[in-house]
Image (cartoon, rainbow, N blue to C red; front, side, top):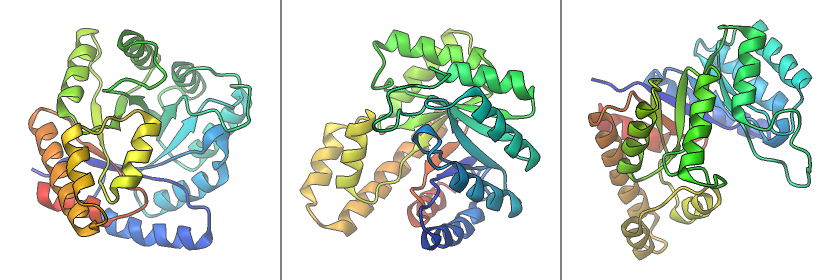
Length: 274
């Protein structure tokens, strides 16, 4: 049976990037995703570009889930954005704490994602399906795994409907996290985030920055390929397909692909899963 999937994009900075994303989206639409999500820059720096992509997705007949981050935002700015999305018929959002933009000292009127979730619910009732982030390998800024789990539980109890995880390559981390969440009485779907691997050097930099672990055996294998991009791509496809299969077999409710605005790898992984 075909797994339920969702796919994430980021808003391009140029007209050329926007045009390329349209063709990427047309390819990925063949997978009939449950929704396409669109990221939101630190402190709302991509607000208009995010809204442009979201409106295009909705006009194409797909569910769009714009990200909303609370760091650097005011209640009034979030209220305005929610009204824009509601007027456009958008029914889903991804509520995140977000990162403080470089050079910005103030966090804004919200400090944590649970406060944003609570605000969305208070402002819009049940209009939006609210997705939140989950970290099977723990948020890099969390003081302890216990604190991170408590933060996740607060987001859910504030009104979240579903969660999408940070990407990871260790399925046991996901299953352990789900078990711990269930033990807290939380039963919302927790969808694993999947990062296809096009370039190991880029993945390593990204993972070091966001706290996602690349298992040593994977690192060593990737490093052994040097600049052989075909071998890196082939090994990456095998690793991510096998991870996805194990997650689905273990009860994951679906998969959320971090597409990086590319279609080929996500299409191939889903073809192998079909």
